[in-house]
Image 1: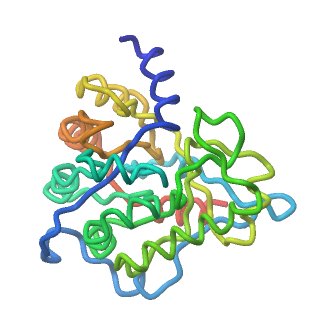
Image 2: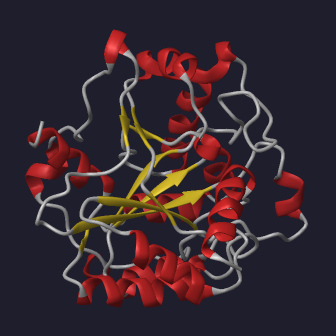
Length: 281
């Protein structure tokens, strides 16, 4: 499959992928991650100022500086109507991927749907309590916030804000102590109406500048190469973590991480990139 075909397939798969992150249900010690500084824990997470006319701000990448930072992000997708598939045995989690990130000591941002947190509360809570990771909002339902978004069902305009708020409530119920005020649109689809409607939610929308192509991919080397070819200082990489819809991701990460470190890159959470962007304004 050529790079072009992989990118087209990846873009379509972003909207429909049944991606999800998982973490082992057993407790782990703080030494598996990097403890957060006390000042960072107490302070408010960095966000971007509202856009023109008060629209919800959109963040795609950090500053292109000599500080070679990169944020790996993982969408934990599960739509509101997929409970029967989970009950039938489909795995929307990927504990092995989360374990690999811990073993490699890679900070990451998990954009989680509220429906997934309801399905896997112990795993959601474990991710949220691990200082190596941060949990951000990917809606409750994983329904689209625009029309014609890769075949996803659509959230009515009058329910957009409540869908986001319902996800935050699901995270809290699952034991996530501090979800970040960041939001990623299902499928990456948004328009002015959606940005205007969510302005009162107080979130910063987070997109990406590197598509990994991992959704439904089976060639881990191709996924890794696409990421390695696309990353620049300040990049946000979108990936997925599910055994059913992104089976090659964990293996790809095992190549991506050491190769980027050889090139001098440092892995950070999205919050660090947003904070850096604010300082460079």
